[in-house]
Length: 93
Figure (cartoon, rainbow, N blue to C red):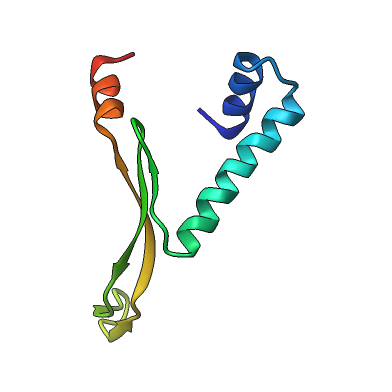
């Protein structure tokens, strides 16, 4: 499913026009992104949890030259599905 498919499904289910559904979808994504950028966890009961994981700085190797390089620490968004979502996916519904 693509973003446009999600917009179409929300528009149909909520009896909205596509422009309003598009705004809602983009606002939800923006709010999740903004919360993660602030370091907040986004917990959607029954669906899952968005959080930020930090990876430590480490040494790496350039595969072309074999030279050792330093890979800086960084933050990565993460998603952990909730129990209900796992059950629904496993049930195929």
